[in-house]
Length: 119
Image 1 (cartoon, rainbow, N blue to C red):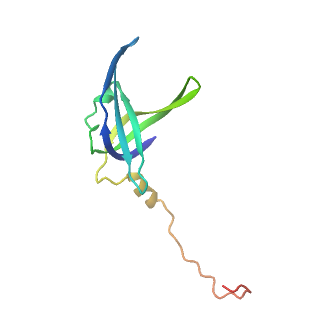
Image 2 (spheres, one colour):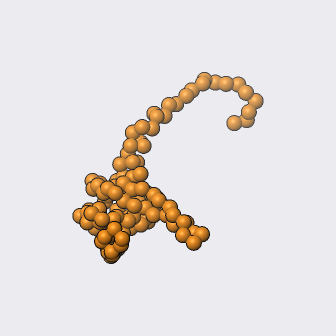
Image 3 (cartoon, rainbow, N blue to C red):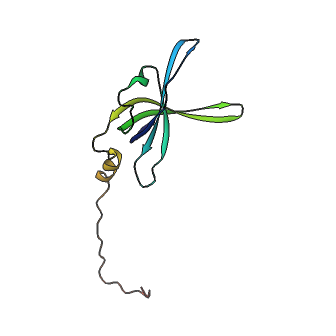
């Protein structure tokens, strides 16, 4: 999946050591464009956490996977980013693509019709 927006906040990186060695996690808050912007927290792990595009104010397109897991009867969803690309101009390309593929609107005229409707 992909989403476009502006990085509103870069949280402090987290590091640690597990059974598979050391790990690094970088979380960023992306604010989407549009009339009702949303904020989404994305996690980047390992080498992906060191991406130079992960800075406040960057207009980016994030490719990500969603994953949910259950813990003690509750479900938690994680948005894991795996690719970050710069976006020029700050407008989401998805909106432009939707406009390009919209069918042209046609005016249909059926001439005068006589019916009993008052409108």
